[in-house]
Length: 169
Image (cartoon, rainbow, N blue to C red):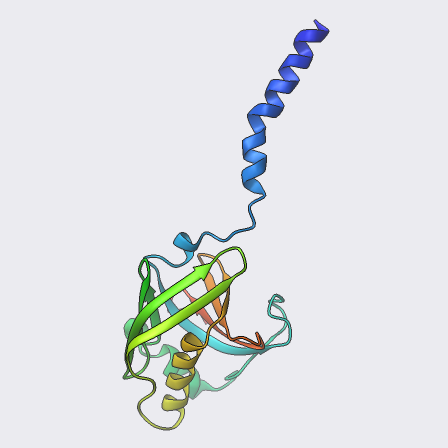
Protein backbone atom coordinates (compact mmCIF):
# COMPACT_ATOMS: atom_id res chain seq x y z
CA UNK A 1 0.00 0.00 0.00
CA UNK A 2 2.84 2.40 0.88
CA UNK A 3 4.48 1.73 -2.50
CA UNK A 4 1.27 2.56 -4.38
CA UNK A 5 0.83 5.81 -2.45
CA UNK A 6 4.42 6.91 -3.28
CA UNK A 7 3.87 6.17 -6.95
CA UNK A 8 0.69 8.30 -7.00
CA UNK A 9 2.55 11.23 -5.42
CA UNK A 10 5.29 11.03 -8.06
CA UNK A 11 2.69 10.90 -10.81
CA UNK A 12 0.92 14.00 -9.41
CA UNK A 13 4.19 15.96 -9.29
CA UNK A 14 5.02 14.95 -12.86
CA UNK A 15 1.54 15.90 -14.04
CA UNK A 16 1.80 19.41 -12.53
CA UNK A 17 5.44 20.07 -13.42
CA UNK A 18 4.71 21.57 -16.89
CA UNK A 19 2.16 23.98 -15.38
CA UNK A 20 4.64 25.09 -12.75
CA UNK A 21 7.36 25.65 -15.33
CA UNK A 22 5.07 27.66 -17.60
CA UNK A 23 4.01 29.90 -14.72
CA UNK A 24 7.63 30.95 -14.22
CA UNK A 25 7.91 32.67 -17.60
CA UNK A 26 8.84 36.33 -17.07
CA UNK A 27 8.50 37.23 -20.73
CA UNK A 28 5.65 39.45 -21.98
CA UNK A 29 3.34 38.13 -24.69
CA UNK A 30 4.31 40.54 -27.47
CA UNK A 31 1.63 39.20 -29.79
CA UNK A 32 -1.18 39.82 -27.31
CA UNK A 33 0.05 43.29 -26.31
CA UNK A 34 0.95 44.67 -29.74
CA UNK A 35 -0.02 42.65 -32.83
CA UNK A 36 -3.38 43.64 -34.27
CA UNK A 37 -3.98 46.15 -31.48
CA UNK A 38 -4.85 49.84 -31.57
CA UNK A 39 -3.76 51.99 -28.63
CA UNK A 40 -4.95 55.53 -27.80
CA UNK A 41 -3.08 58.32 -26.07
CA UNK A 42 -3.95 58.68 -22.40
CA UNK A 43 -1.41 61.26 -21.21
CA UNK A 44 2.27 62.13 -20.87
CA UNK A 45 4.12 61.70 -17.57
CA UNK A 46 7.41 62.24 -15.79
CA UNK A 47 8.76 59.67 -13.33
CA UNK A 48 11.83 58.98 -11.24
CA UNK A 49 11.22 55.22 -11.17
CA UNK A 50 9.94 53.70 -14.41
CA UNK A 51 8.70 50.52 -12.70
CA UNK A 52 6.71 52.29 -9.95
CA UNK A 53 3.20 53.06 -11.17
CA UNK A 54 2.57 55.34 -8.18
CA UNK A 55 5.56 57.56 -8.92
CA UNK A 56 4.42 59.67 -11.85
CA UNK A 57 3.35 63.24 -12.54
CA UNK A 58 1.15 64.16 -15.49
CA UNK A 59 2.67 66.84 -17.69
CA UNK A 60 -0.76 68.33 -18.45
CA UNK A 61 -2.56 67.68 -15.15
CA UNK A 62 -5.51 70.01 -14.72
CA UNK A 63 -5.11 71.46 -18.22
CA UNK A 64 -8.58 71.17 -19.75
CA UNK A 65 -7.38 72.44 -23.14
CA UNK A 66 -4.69 69.73 -23.32
CA UNK A 67 -7.20 67.05 -22.30
CA UNK A 68 -9.58 68.22 -25.04
CA UNK A 69 -6.79 68.12 -27.63
CA UNK A 70 -5.61 64.64 -26.58
CA UNK A 71 -9.03 63.02 -26.21
CA UNK A 72 -11.62 65.37 -27.74
CA UNK A 73 -11.44 63.97 -31.24
CA UNK A 74 -12.53 60.48 -30.26
CA UNK A 75 -10.79 57.70 -32.14
CA UNK A 76 -9.76 59.92 -35.09
CA UNK A 77 -6.35 60.94 -33.74
CA UNK A 78 -3.56 60.16 -31.27
CA UNK A 79 -3.54 56.42 -31.85
CA UNK A 80 -1.07 53.77 -32.92
CA UNK A 81 -2.04 50.50 -34.60
CA UNK A 82 0.34 47.55 -34.71
CA UNK A 83 0.57 44.74 -37.22
CA UNK A 84 3.12 41.90 -37.21
CA UNK A 85 6.14 44.13 -37.89
CA UNK A 86 4.64 47.44 -39.00
CA UNK A 87 2.75 50.26 -37.33
CA UNK A 88 0.65 53.25 -38.32
CA UNK A 89 0.14 56.23 -36.04
CA UNK A 90 -1.91 59.40 -36.30
CA UNK A 91 -1.55 62.59 -34.32
CA UNK A 92 -3.55 65.73 -34.93
CA UNK A 93 -3.16 66.47 -38.64
CA UNK A 94 -0.24 64.09 -39.20
CA UNK A 95 0.08 60.41 -39.97
CA UNK A 96 3.26 58.37 -39.88
CA UNK A 97 4.19 54.72 -40.18
CA UNK A 98 7.08 52.30 -40.24
CA UNK A 99 8.40 49.18 -38.60
CA UNK A 100 8.65 48.16 -34.97
CA UNK A 101 10.10 45.41 -32.80
CA UNK A 102 9.84 44.50 -29.13
CA UNK A 103 11.57 42.09 -26.80
CA UNK A 104 9.26 40.78 -24.10
CA UNK A 105 12.10 39.52 -21.92
CA UNK A 106 13.83 42.87 -21.29
CA UNK A 107 10.99 45.25 -22.28
CA UNK A 108 12.97 46.76 -25.16
CA UNK A 109 11.07 48.52 -27.93
CA UNK A 110 12.14 50.21 -31.14
CA UNK A 111 10.48 52.06 -34.00
CA UNK A 112 11.77 53.00 -37.42
CA UNK A 113 9.58 55.70 -38.95
CA UNK A 114 9.71 55.29 -42.73
CA UNK A 115 7.05 57.72 -43.92
CA UNK A 116 4.95 60.58 -42.67
CA UNK A 117 5.64 63.73 -40.76
CA UNK A 118 6.02 65.04 -37.24
CA UNK A 119 3.88 67.89 -35.92
CA UNK A 120 1.58 70.28 -37.65
CA UNK A 121 -0.65 73.05 -36.38
CA UNK A 122 0.37 75.64 -33.81
CA UNK A 123 0.48 76.30 -30.09
CA UNK A 124 -0.56 73.56 -27.69
CA UNK A 125 -1.93 71.38 -30.51
CA UNK A 126 1.48 71.36 -32.16
CA UNK A 127 3.26 70.73 -28.83
CA UNK A 128 1.12 67.67 -28.03
CA UNK A 129 1.31 66.34 -31.59
CA UNK A 130 5.11 66.67 -31.56
CA UNK A 131 5.32 64.99 -28.14
CA UNK A 132 3.20 62.08 -29.41
CA UNK A 133 5.47 61.69 -32.45
CA UNK A 134 8.66 61.95 -30.36
CA UNK A 135 7.45 59.45 -27.76
CA UNK A 136 7.07 56.87 -30.52
CA UNK A 137 10.22 57.87 -32.41
CA UNK A 138 12.49 57.78 -29.34
CA UNK A 139 10.87 54.88 -27.45
CA UNK A 140 13.41 52.33 -26.26
CA UNK A 141 11.46 50.60 -23.49
CA UNK A 142 7.87 49.68 -22.79
CA UNK A 143 5.82 48.46 -19.86
CA UNK A 144 2.30 47.20 -20.11
CA UNK A 145 -0.20 44.47 -20.72
CA UNK A 146 -3.37 44.12 -22.80
CA UNK A 147 -5.09 47.00 -20.93
CA UNK A 148 -2.45 49.77 -20.72
CA UNK A 149 0.89 50.45 -22.36
CA UNK A 150 3.71 52.91 -21.62
CA UNK A 151 6.54 53.99 -23.95
CA UNK A 152 9.78 55.22 -22.35
CA UNK A 153 12.82 56.91 -23.92
CA UNK A 154 16.36 55.78 -23.14
CA UNK A 155 16.60 57.57 -19.75
CA UNK A 156 13.19 56.18 -18.62
CA UNK A 157 12.34 59.43 -16.81
CA UNK A 158 9.26 60.22 -18.86
CA UNK A 159 6.64 58.23 -20.72
CA UNK A 160 3.53 58.28 -22.83
CA UNK A 161 0.68 56.15 -21.52
CA UNK A 162 -1.70 54.52 -23.97
CA UNK A 163 -5.03 52.80 -23.31
CA UNK A 164 -7.27 50.46 -25.29
CA UNK A 165 -10.34 52.57 -24.66
CA UNK A 166 -10.44 56.17 -25.88
CA UNK A 167 -12.71 57.25 -23.00
CA UNK A 168 -10.13 56.31 -20.33
CA UNK A 169 -8.04 59.14 -18.93
